[in-house]
Image (spheres, rainbow, N blue to C red):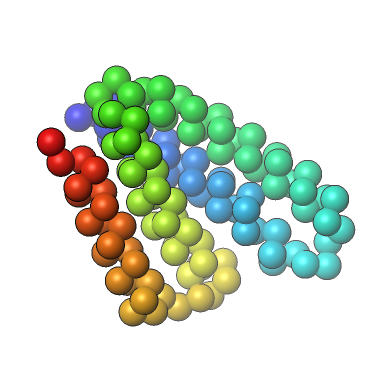
Length: 112
């Protein structure tokens, strides 16, 4: 269980960097595109430095499918928080429904 917890923590951090790399540049639309690409690549480097060890460690106790579903749930969760705090986007009922469906997908993927 400790391995799964460590894996999840690394994936949360990894997804935080991913969201910053993929969407953070939208706060700086006046910056030259070339610079935003370089900045995004720089952030993606740290994402991979966390994601690769997380998946390697997690694969000791979880299946690849379980890892992917956990990653996707964390991705959407960290994105929702990123959108809320960085872009001030308020969650809607449709966001809640889509999240609930993803949780259902995670349940069925993890079920033996």
